[in-house]
Length: 99
Image (cartoon, rainbow, N blue to C red; front, side, top):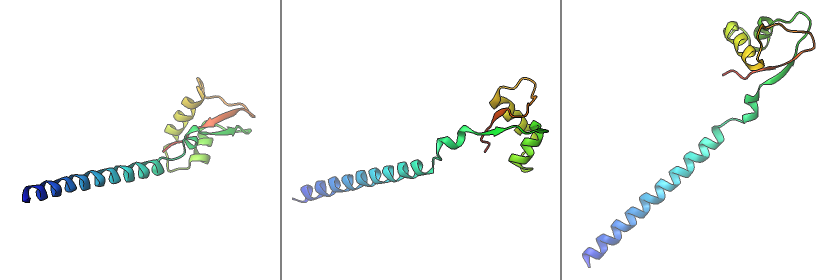
């Protein structure tokens, strides 16, 4: 009788641990799903080049002085597959998302 009670108690403990692990796994996956930002944000945003714009001036105007403009210019060039970095008025470029 005592052995049966111990086995039952062990079985209940195993079930409780299993249920706890499942609840924690579900909670973590929900937290991760909520934490992942919308992928569309990372696609970049369009920008129409105005007269007098340079990659440097766009980098400073859009991304501010918190970022190294050289790195921003490089990222814009990479995103738009520029070879020489020359811009034309009215040209549409994509400004990349930078963390």
